[in-house]
Length: 363
Image (cartoon, rainbow, N blue to C red; front, top):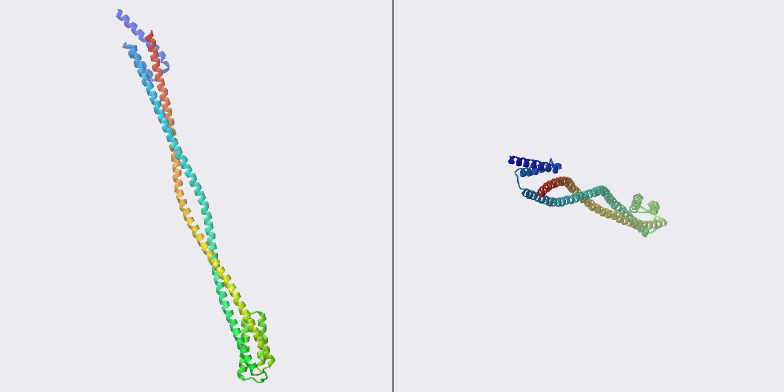
């Protein structure tokens, strides 16, 4: 009968203790760890286990929980530092890629502007070179024409001067034979007629390029020669000789002037030709330089297209990596926070149980 009463008392005491313990852990009623701890204490108490040993066990569990919390704090700190370093590296990579991309785009824009300017310059240089070629051909044509014209006119002057000297010789011979000659020999008459005709032809030839002052001398000479074909008048003879002498002088002056003008014209045309050749060389060098630069720019632009594509891809990939890393950090932080709260809850549960055991030990 006493055994039954003692058992009943123990059963009542355990029931009372479980009720008190459940009340203490009411806020953790749905916590798995809380249920496990309650079951642990319940089993111990039902089996009559030592409260001191249970307290020591709970303290060990608390110490392990604290150690685990500290380990998690350390690991989280390490992860955070590593994540910050990784993010900093990714950010530096992104800034470098964006900087490279900006520089490449600026270079691309600058080269495109230079390309347009050079293309305009090449067109202008080519047009100038075409004009130069036409100018050089025109200058050479003018020089050739000048040389041909000079040769013809110089020869005409020579012929005229020679004819004048022949007439002068003939007339001097007539004057030497005596001014009182009334009748002329047939040969002399023929020579006078031929000389008159020669003067007429020379006059016609020189009309295109001889000074008018010298042309005025031809007509009285021709008339004088015509008169002397019938008779020789000493006064007419002397007058014609004087006119021929003046004509020779005028023709020589005209020939000298022709030669001087020709020399000046040749010098001018030669200088023009030299200037055009120098201009041509300058234009050719400028055109070649511009074309070479165009090739360099086009090659660099093609290269920049590839580099810009790479930089764009690198920027996009790095931005995605930063987003992924940020998300991972947020998930890790959330998980760490949840674990820290859960671990603290577990420590609180153990503390409540230790507090409860201490209370029971003090009763």
